[in-house]
Amino acid sequence: VQEYGSIILKNVDYAERLMNDLKLTYQLDSGAFPFCPKPVRLVRYLKELVIDIANDPAFSNRDIEFESESSLAEVTVAIDSNLFRRAVGNIVINALVHNASDTKVTISVTEDMESGICISIRDNGTGIRESEQAKLFTRYYRGTNTKEKTEGSGLGLAIAKQIVILHGGDIVVKSKQGEGTVFYILIPVN
Image 1: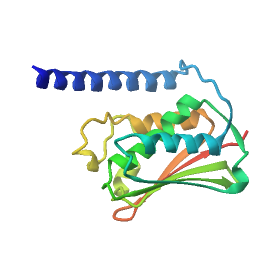
Image 2: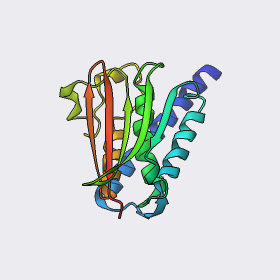
Image 3: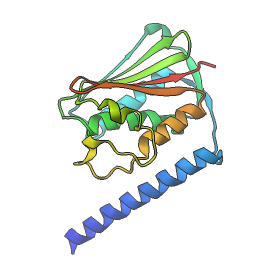
């Protein structure tokens, strides 16, 4: 009974997460989600996010680094901190979940002369085929290296892109098989 009960609870949690993801993606599409951007010191905010992920027992023994240009320490950007956390956190966790345990994930913040601020999330993992990269931000698309991790919905990166665009930014991916992947989140300072 306990064994089947735990399987039922796991599947109920998965169904609830899936419904919440579906609801969020359609709310973001229709503009029905309350968007509350407030000035945030970006470097500090991202450091705290990385620390929270590193302190999660599932990722506590993983190699996660944070880097930023010292000139950006006091830079503030207007973001909805809960939504933006969801976008960046999703990409970082994907890099950890869909790669080997010895994969290094580095989150860095740099200044981009054209866009404002560039947040990059890079790993030295397995990489993503070029044919799959164009589909990554499409709803319900799950890459080929997600077969053993069946709990995903294929909505995470689509939601991340919607959130970044809502903030006036853009997100792009560059990857080579066997060398790793880099996601660039470009957001305006103002």
